[in-house]
Image 1: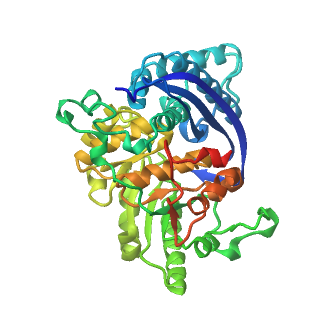
Image 2: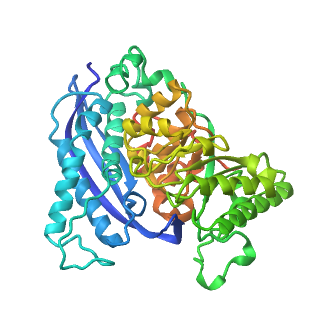
Length: 470
């Protein structure tokens, strides 16, 4: 097709970001993470050229949790992987649609990941700091989820550039005029079906945002210790955040190994939310939960949900779904989730790294999937199309996305049909990282009545308006 692109240049840059308060999820506490931003240059068959951009946090704590290797070493590995992937994409000289390019190269990610980790291990740049004898032979390999994160800003930049070089919103570039049908990735049953068939024609004008309640977050104002909070004018308790942003959707991070604490935490958050709802005359409330793989078995969540229902039928009713209760390896931890899924929808997250895991999860009784742009715009769209066709529910979740990555994530959610809104928590933990982007997209970064506005998602590509951002 004349609109197909060839890659001319790929380059990445990294920015260290310090969190204003620690973010706790599962067994991980995050205080700082590097942000990766990628610029690409492409040309189409007409000889027209354009640049595109993408970004993501290199969240090793989520992609590669480890009690043995320090955060700094894992982050360094992800930077090296990103650079290596930039060279891989730059070496690809065929014309194609961004989705074709991504999946044509994805099979090489595992080999490159192994090469990068072997090189860093042999050179002593990755080594055990806890729990292992440094003199013993060892070899560490980053989970494939980490490789997908490293590739995701390159993929996003290609989608952005594709739209720009063809002077369209990239969401108008997923139909028969611009790409093949879905059968190369999803099989013959998708012959004649296109990603565009499952998209909204326009962005939702406003979209509800799920605010993250981390495991260390203070709930009420009177819990805040003035001696250890940032004096930056932003809220330091959930109560203040709800009052400031008019929140109606909350994602609750739980321990997954302390039943009484988890039940108490959910009930306290629901109670507080209803108190403010009544005082501010707010609308209906929605909650989701996430234990980030910490449950030893699904029975933990079965017991927890049954006890929540017993103690507060209202709280139980307002819980929409739970994400990834058990460990991500679906073969090593092949739990039957049918019983749990009959109580509440259970969404695959950390395990969702390919279509094979999607199919395996369905066999095991998982209810749906969590889409994240950190696994790739291309992969998210293919997974969304499959889920939509099979009437499987999906959500759009966050990776504490700041800057361009937040614009991309909210844009994706506003063009598809997730269960409810989109998670976005960078404004809580790294708000000042996005000052340039926020000047162009103020109502996307700052919520009103618990929602983000998409009215500034304009122009070709992913709608960043990068020229105004600078």
